[in-house]
Image (tube, rainbow, N blue to C red; front, side, top):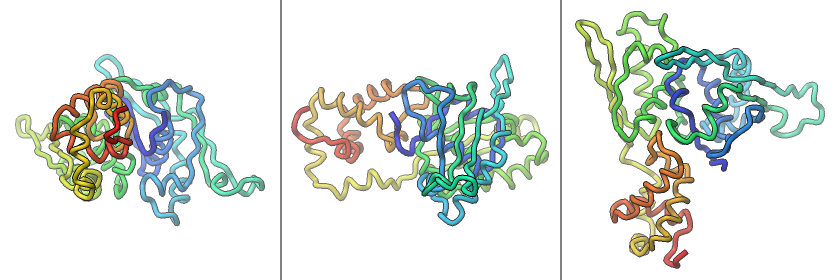
Length: 317
C-alpha cells in the first residue's frame, strides 16, 4: 500500500555514512515516498520524480524546483552509501539507473513528463527501503519542509529513530562517519559551530520536534553528544479536537472491541500516526499497540481526530 508523504527507511540506512546534497536527498526521498509499504518490491522498479514532487513534499518554490531536480540528478548516479556493522563495512551504490528526460529530443512529451527523472534503486539498497518488518524509521516528508541543510535532514532522521525514547547518545566519531565529515572540521569547535548548531536551529524552527543537546568528555576531549528531543506541543492535527462537536469523544468512549481493533488497523496505515510508532515494530505490531492505546480514555481523546478521519461513528462495525 502506498501512503502519501510517508518515508520509511531501514535503520541501517539511517545510521549509514553517505554524502548527499539537500536536493539529492529530496530526490532519493521522493522516490522512497512512492515505494508501496508492507509488500515486497522488485529491485527493477522504476520511480518517476518531477519538479512538482519537490513542491508537494518539501515546499520547494515552483520557480526553483526544476533547477533543483536537475542539479540533484547530475551527480546522484555516482553516489554511494557505506553501511557498518560490527563485522563488516560495506559500500554500495544508491542507484542502478538514472534517466533525465530531455524535452528538446522528445517532441511527444507533455506536461510533467518533460521535466522528470526516472531512477531505479540498486539491488543492494532496495531491501533497505521496502517491505520492512522491523528495525526501521518512518516519518512524514512534510516534516522536512523548511530544512535547507543536508545535515539537518540527517540529524532529524537520527532523532526520529529514537523519538519514543526522547534522547540518544552518539559518539562524535560515529556522527562524523554518518555525515561523511571524517576529514573536515578537525577541531570539534568548528564542527559544532558550522554543522551541529545550525542543523539544530533549523530543526527547532521548522520541524515538529524540539531538540537540545549536551556534550560528554572522555578525559579532556569531547567524545559524545547526547541529543534530547520531544514533539512540540503545538500540533495541528490534535488541536482540531477543540473545533469538533463536543460529543465526538463521548462517541469514541462507546467504541466496541470489534471497532477498536478495526480502527486500530486503519490508524496504523495513516501517515499522521507515524509520530506514535516505534521504529522497530511492524505495521501489525503498531496496530495492536494502537488497539491497546484506545483502552485508555485519555489516549482515545487524543486520537479522536484520527478516528473520525478514519470514518468512526457510533454505528458498530
